[in-house]
Structures are given as structure tokens and as C-alpha cells.
Image 1 (cartoon, rainbow, N blue to C red):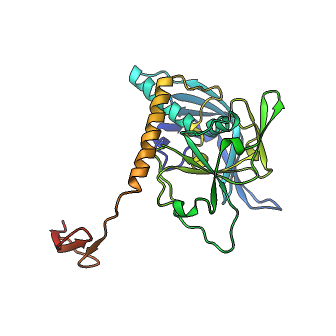
Image 2: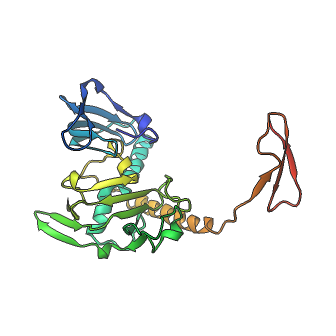
Image 3: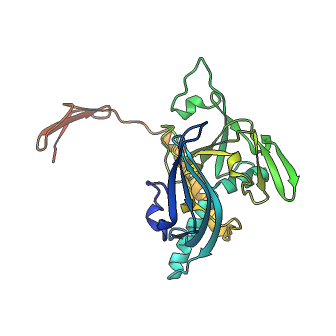
Length: 296
């Protein structure tokens, strides 16, 4: 339902976990995996977003390299205890939607230029004469190329469905989100990757993925799980709140540019280790003399 380090984990609960059964599958071809199934719908209470969920699990597979799951989901809104709790739910729902795959798909479909929520890059396939680093500014225009929505091919299929062609792996930076990443040391926003094995995937007019098996998610988008799931007809109701979200993103951009200009302090201690009660010495690039303090 949620990853162990997700802040929502403590606020989501499966009310009938006993209906879930697990089995290990050893196929003749391919890797082994764990399969989960449930004879009855899973009843889930999500107090982070304010929903009671009825989840009809259709397929769940856990492999060493990843996992996949699908099912039919029905949402019912919880009754809030007061207006403050309702407002908290609305803000959390909006935040989840802003960083969701559905919102990304809508941005691509509608050709929204200069998105304040997403920044996309085309991942260049491996170069034999170059090893990729963890510094974004070194990789820009080398292994990742800025990608505009207008350069992504879209085709209507009829019945309000559309095909998005994605021949390359795409790296996505979620601007303004308060979640770090372990990939770049000079970028402080969540990062996702999407890849279509067949070179395309289909969505409806609301950005909902028609066949989940047509798209591979990794990074931040793969973390969302059921804990951050929203009804397919969810819409951002408050234009004022949306403006506030954009303002936070703009401030985040400015803060990132400012942080790039910060100088880094170089410090040296008088010994490589200290014991409690021992006096330690400190000197650095911006100190004219050694400063001493006592280890508590």
C-alpha cells in the first residue's frame, strides 16, 4: 500500500488483511516471483487523503527487479471531523495529483509548454567512452537532453483515447516537491523515469493509462502506490490553491539557483576520532585559528 519511508504509511491501513494469500511462482521461463491474490475486496482506510477504498485485486507480482499490481478501485470519501481536517485532505489530494502520472500525461497530451511541475529529459543510451556521474550539470546535454512536450508525438485513436509515442527512456524532475533523491548530488527534487517497451502507450482524455503493462515506472512515480491513489475523476477544485502550489514551485526554483551559488565550508579536525569528554580542535578555510570545544 505504501513504501516503508513514505510519510503516509502510518495513515493507511488494510482493514481485512486476512483475505490476502501469497504464493511463490517458479515459471519454466523467466524469473521467479511472489504472487498475491485476494478472494474478497481489500478494504483500505486512507486517513492521509480522506478515503475509504475498496480494492478488487486482479494481479500482484513481486520480482527482484520490481513489482506490478492492478485492480478495480472504488473510492468513498471519509467524513471529516472538522473543516481543518477537510482542508488538509484537499491539500494532500491536490499535492498527490500534481506529481502523478495522470497529470504528467495530461501535460503531454495538451502540449502544456514550460510546465512548472515537470521538467523532462531524454535519456541518451550508454556511451562507451563515457561513464555517467552523479552530477546533473555534468550530464546535461551529454547523457540527458532537455525534452519539450511539443516534441512528443501524440495520435488520437478514437473513443477519446490517445497514443503517446515514447521511443526513448524519459527522465522527469518533479519541480517543487519536498522529497529528495539519491541519484544526483546537485539536484534536490524527486526524479522519475518512464519507459515504454513497445515505443508507445495509450491514455484516455483524462490522462489515465489504459494498459499499465505498457509503461515501466521507476523513481518517484513508482513510489506512489495505493497510499497516493486518487479517483479517476478527481479534479483540482481550488484555483487559488493551485496558484499557491505554483508559487511554491517558483520559490523552489529560485532557492535552487541560490543554493548553487553557496560556498562549501572545508573543515579539518585535530584527530580522526574523539572520546566523550575529550577536547576537540577544529580549523577550516574560513577560520583564522583553531577553535576548541568539548565532546559531550
